[in-house]
Image (tube, rainbow, N blue to C red; front, side):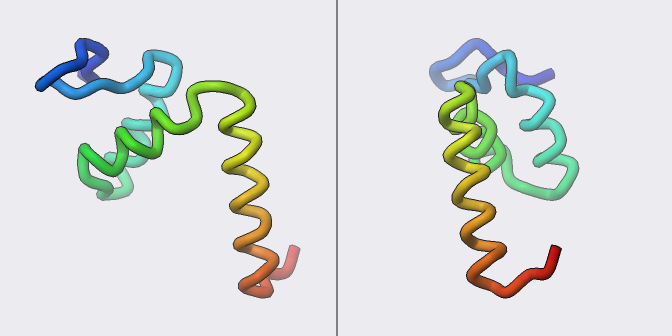
Amino acid sequence: MVSARGGKYGYVVRSRQNVYRALRRQGKSKRIAAMIANRGDTFAERSAMARKAARTRKRRGRKR
């Protein structure tokens, strides 16, 4: 169960809890998974993350 309670219990935006669970399955810590999941709670934030990821892939020379 992902906490939406806040405070000392932590907090993950309800619409992003599936992302949090996926990150935890990948081995990320609770803190890091929550930070990443909460960062993209709006469409604009997710778009910004996608643009950043595209720049990173381009810079590293990844092919299509």
